[in-house]
Amino acid sequence: MAKASTGQRGRARQNGARGKPTFVLRQATLKDVDALVALNKAAYPGDDEAHLPWQHGHVESQLRVFGEGQLVVEHAGRVVAAASALVVSFGRDPYRNHTWAGITDNGMFYNHDPWGDTLYGADACVHPDFRRRGLGRMLYDGRRELCRRKNLRRIVLGGRLYDYAEHAGAMSAEEYARHVEAEELVDPVLSFQLAQGFVLKRVMPNYLADPRSLDYATFVEWLNPDYKHRYRKARAIRLSCVQYRMRRIASFEDFARQVRYFTGVAADYGSDFVVFPELLTAQLLCLLRVKTPLEAIRKLTDYTHRVDTLFEELAAEYQLAILGGTHPRKNEGRIENVASLYLPDGTTHRQPKIHITPGERRSWGIEGGSTLQVFDTPKARVGILVCYDVEFPEAARYLADQGAEVILVPFCTDDRQSYLRVRYCAQARAVENQVYLALAGTVGNLPDVENLDIQYAQSAVLSPSDFPFARDGILVEAATNSETIITTDLDFESIEEAVNEGTVRQRNDRRPDLFRFDVSVGEKR
Image 1 (spheres, rainbow, N blue to C red):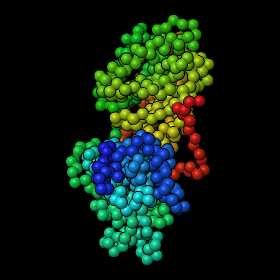
Image 2 (cartoon, helix red, strand yellow):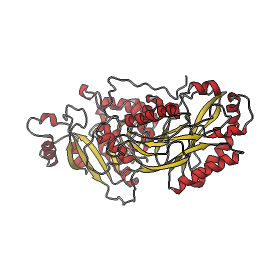
Image 3 (cartoon, rainbow, N blue to C red):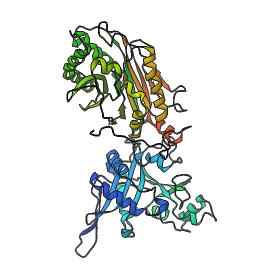
Image 4 (cartoon, one colour):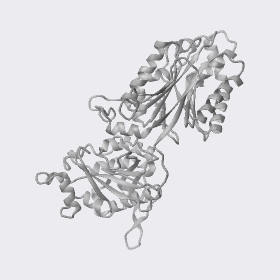
């Protein structure tokens, strides 16, 4: 399979006596989703190709993740050809074997890498009624234009050996591909790709379930002659977690001073992200004179504007992304425990806590949110699970499936057993989903503040358990119950290596034929 597009309207293909364009190359949009699904079904009609066509979820995800990479050819208002692509990084081995499902994240493109140097063609198809009219060449021209415009080093395709099954008794897949390369045989896919200037680099086994190719595919490459070398550091971020000590304060300014201090420390270490704990602003409760915890949490929401202003200013001043712990917020008469991610450009993302503990519900009247999403930031795709949320495997699974590269876990626990529930579950989520998790908790005490009188934490940054990572799956961890800040680098290329070539590959080895995963977060109920 193979797909790609360009972010600009392509040249119209001229035809007819009056010179009116009959075929137009353009970038696909969400309005084309139904047409693209229908086109794929028409292009792959055979029983042996039933698994190849895109579904609506695939197309929508591709357009949202990398709209520039999705091309269509339009004729008289009808989509008659299409191609899609994503940008990837091959890491240490630019010609490594891979599978179609692995390199495209099962066609969802969640692993699209804005920092990569390779445009990967995931699928290209032409409606049967419009073949042999030069539309394939138009799509490939669009790919080359996109590659040049984005200054990518190359285009790579994994091509079906379309007629290999007919020759398998006489030669190996490698031999078949070399005969086609020497023009001694003709293959509808490989011969076309070679004619478009691609070079055969190798033959890959187990690329895609395809009886015509016997699951083999070619690794073909086109090098961008206009490529200008660019400095590119490894896809990584530096992240700090603040283990914050709760203590009595005399004013909001005291609170702001402590937050500013830790933000400055993170900036001094060159961090891209700094994570504060859950219920960070509960420290302000010691300033309130109230009779009940429910009244206290409602009055705490009055600080919302000042809290937002503080973190927005710090993010802009220090030029790093700040997860400002969580703060109770009013939402249509409800109170939710909401994490806010403040970016240097002024953008703020909100993630409510979804699962509420009995104590939170009973003492504070907090209710769970119903949205869960991955946030695109300039440095990473980030998910947030607030404390108790990490104890539910489906929440982390959903974020990983949506392309989260790191999941931030602000937490607040009162004793060791409560903390260990969070810690053990977070480590499991890192292993299950092959993703980083960063935990930041509170320590210390707030005398006379009900439900927050004692704290227990050992903040940590956790990884999958495999060779590219620390041997115990712990990148860094704080001393127990000490106020401190921990900092580490997260290498996303190591994650890609683990997902595609790891000792075990939990993401790729799931059994959707046995276990169905239905999601309704964010939908109106």
